[in-house]
Image 1 (cartoon, chains in turn blue, purple):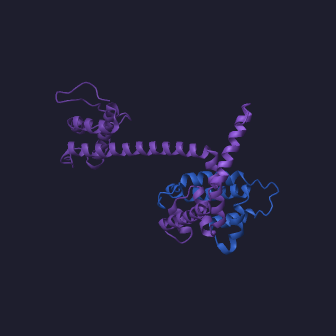
Image 2: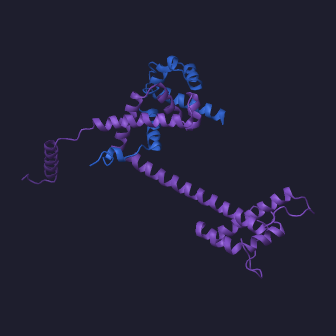
Length: 85
Length: 215
C-alpha cells in the first residue's frame, strides 16, 4: 500500500466538518461557571479588532478552554463582520 | 407562460410573470427563437413551463434595456434582436442551472456533514483533531480559526495578519494538515493477539448474555 492509499491520507480535510464541529464543541465543552481566568471584555474586543500576539496570546489561549469567553468572542467578531459588510 | 400558437410557432405573453411589459419587437424576436430556446432550456432545466417563463423574463428585461437606451422614435440599437434575446436567454438559463447545482451541492454536503457528525466515532476523531489543532496552532493560525468559525472569508482574514486571502488559506490548511499527519503517525493499531483476545472476549460475553454455555 502506498502512502497515498493509506486511509488517513485519502480522507481529505473537510473544512465545513472541521469548523462545524469545532464551533459546537468549543461552545459547550468548557462551561467554566466560576469564570476562572477570564479576560475582561475589553481585551476580547481589542483582540477582535486588532490581534497582536505579544498582547493577546493569553486571551487567545484562554478561548480554547472557556466556552463562555469563546461564545462572547464569537459575538464580538460577528459584530465586526456585520459592521464591515 | 406561452398561450396558443402564432402562425410561425408559439405565442408568448406580452407581460412576464413579474408584470413587466414586453416590447412588441422584442416579443416577436423572442417568439422567433422560441423553438431553439425551448430545446436548449429543456435540456438544462427540464421543465418547458420554466423555460417559457425564463424566455418571457429575458424578453421583458431586454425591453426595459431598449427603453432605457433607446428613446421613442430612435432606431433600435440592437441589429440582431432575435440573436440578442437568444444569447441573453442562454446566459440566464446557465445562471439558473448553476444556482440549481449549487443548491443541490450544498444540500448534499449538508446532509453528508450531518450524517458524519452524528457518528460517535467520527465525533471522537474530530474532537481529537480540534484539540490537537488548538494546542499546536500558533497565535496567528488560532486567530484565523476563530474568524473562520464565525464565517469570515479568507479574503477578510488574510489582511488582518498582513497576508493575502490565498496565503492565509494555504497557511491554515497546511497547519491542519501537519496536525493530521502527526496524528496519523502516532495512531497505532492494536496488536493482533490483543485484537483476537478482545474478539474472543466479546464473543463469550454475547454467548453468556444469550444464556448459552461457552464452548
